[in-house]
Length: 124
Image 1 (cartoon, rainbow, N blue to C red):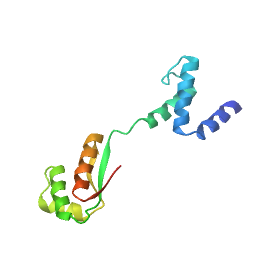
Image 2: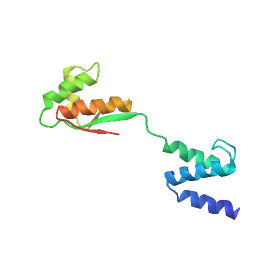
Image 3: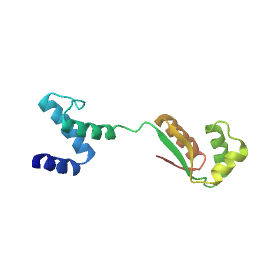
């Protein structure tokens, strides 16, 4: 069991990228996939899932800048169903999430429109 403990300690010290590379080398060497019922492959499969690219993003309004009225108009355009008062409260309450769990393209488009209006935006 000492070898298993040493391996686990080695895996614990690896970055996700290093662990992903290890999984690929392991699969090539032993002609298996990470889904195979092998103890090391099971641990590595969990690490590979964590490396997958994020597909949902939040658009966070950090500040309205100097052109608050323009930012309010763009917020109303981006977030459907917001009235003037709700959009104003949202902008004045920054930092706040404008959009949550949207695709990367939609997040980038919203960020571009809001930054063009003068707002400070971050995507998480």
